[in-house]
Length: 83
Image (cartoon, rainbow, N blue to C red; front, side):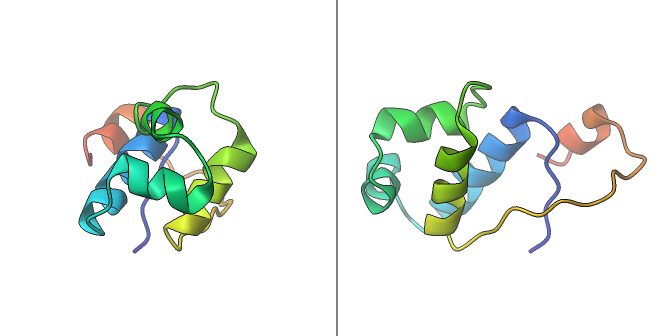
């Protein structure tokens, strides 16, 4: 899997899609990370105040990683259409 996300909302959509694909509830994912269900919900809804260390912990719990790459030419609207 190699998905692209440029906004908090896109990151949240990816987290939600992968969590659901693994048949986890928000509460179950939160329990794996030591977070409340409400915090998982805030990440999945794209709350821009979510802390980077919290997002990284959620990604790790889903066996995902954060990568930095040179920005491609597609605009945010084009990428949003993927979701």
